[in-house]
Length: 250
Image: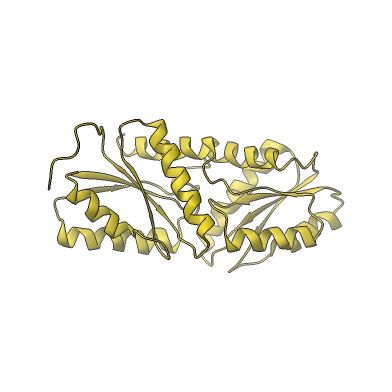
């Protein structure tokens, strides 16, 4: 390994996003990486993607090893601890260890509730995006997520919805853009049938792309008054990433 640059302090941070064919998604991840780096001057923060966009995590880890870093903190930019967390990220780390066994990779928890409960920063970021959507008040809320077949992952989305319901004191339902029912429009309709007149949608997405577009279109067709933007580089998400980084050091 070559020596790391003297101007850089601390172990570098590798952000690993899901990846999308939509260029807006990669742009959002790069913006988040830049915001995290700005919050920790001198620390290298590198974005990577599991699919569609380079570098992948294995490639990025090797590049950091070649740059002389003996350790890397890997933060999965995932909101549920489903397949990508259980399989894809361990495979990427294992592939690096075959060729660079001396590189120590510390993997943090996902950003959504997994081992721990719902982080207050995650809830604050969701509430920020809701406020930015300017719904003018709402009496029903749908938490729209990408979707997963993993029951434990869906349960974690439910915990986020329950936390929002407790914080905002409005009826709240979960919806999915794929893989599991109900669709966002269906969830909006169910709240309206039960008496809600103004239903807003909180976006449980890290970046724009197909799934957020699907949820938005479905919600609008069902009469939602507002659909929040993805978390992207919200200050609260930056804080959450740094919480995950700091947690690996105890």
